Amino acid sequence: MTNPNKAKGSAFELAIFRYLFEVFGRLVRRPHNEGFKDVGDLHLSPFVIQAKNYADVATALNIGLAGAEVQKVHAGERWAVVVIKKRNAHISQARVSMTLETFREVAKELHDLSKVSEDYDNYRRDYD
Image (cartoon, rainbow, N blue to C red; front, side, top):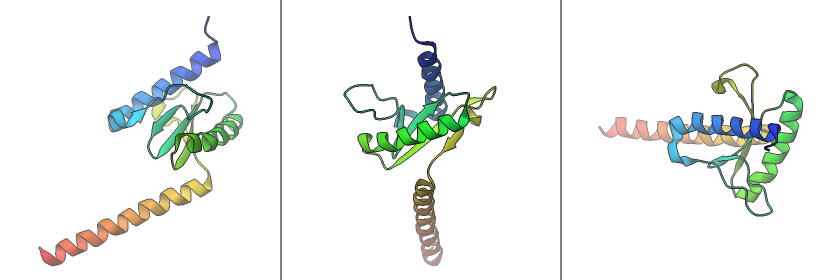
């Protein structure tokens, strides 16, 4: 018989997968648990996603994020996040957490992309 906690965790992973799949399609992957190194529950490159369905949010955050940081290295991805289930709420209301270092890197990359886009728009405006 299946472990009830494992089944609960797998159902949460599947809910996250389906929710992200609506937008990202096949870019979202559920890697197989094979080999000796855990590579995370879900991948949406450049992110490794660790899903936690714990009643104790602090424990989910600490264990999940620590695990995700190791898993991103095993998976060869840049960033790690933990998704924590919010009780009695739609999957869209789950909480996503990352280290401040990861947040800074993601924010810098988004800012740099925004700057490139703005520069391109200004260039087109000048020559259109």
